[in-house]
Length: 358
Image 1 (cartoon, helix red, strand yellow):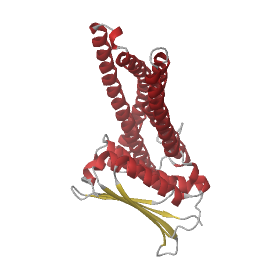
Image 2: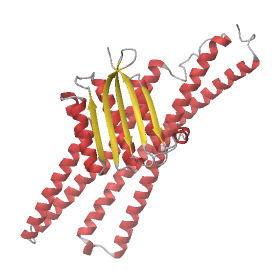
Image 3: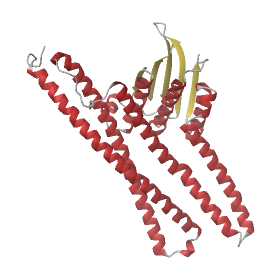
Image 4: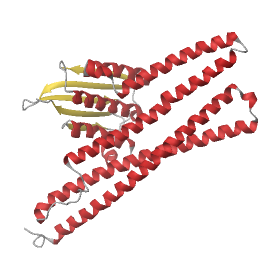
């Protein structure tokens, strides 16, 4: 069968899909340029916010050295920077969601074009395949995930350890000044500084654990999950019940990492969106009907819930982005099956069924 022998409607559909593919490719180029610009702006604003915060801390300690006009200007500048940073972070997130949606649309359109080609008798597109599939698409997904993770780490470093360290430097300066005026007050301030350093150290250790739990390599998935769930539960006042069944062996490293990240992302969604008081995490190994050993992972909460169809249809929603990440981790990295159930007022459950490597 040739193009001339094909029904016009099929040829028109093929041409329309190719046009849509090219449009999506141009859109992705534009989004990536905007992402770079916005990321740079966020980094500049973060540095500016840190400078303003240091000024405000100095103002709190030495308020008598500043005029009312200076105080008013400092607080106005701080408010302006915070609002601007909040706006730019929101824009950055929206661009990331648009990029994710565009990549998914690009892949879907390319799959449709590939399916139509045998019917039309035309060759596959050449010149770099604007809609990447197979290993190229996987590489693109990995790069995108790495950049997203770097941005997340950058924001957490700024809001966490960087702010804490800045505060410690300021308090050390206060101690230095007090030594010349009031030794007893300086001693009390040094005690408070010691406690603040210890708290910052603990926060930094938790931050490192969230980035890459070292015990995951040393002890495996189950002990790492137990420690992580305990930390999340204590920090967020969330009652989490962890059940690990029949997992009496070590899994390949990339399986353990991917499953841990799946549960981590799912619990993050519970904390951010669900307004839940309880959560349940299940990891079990069982035999499938065909004899294949499967890992069943489930994260369930008693939160507010949502209409799954509405969220999946919304390409710009934050929860949609979390669901997309969960699905990608299971289906792309582990070749498993992903499922989600939710209803208003009845909580949410996300599940993964992952075949064990032979």
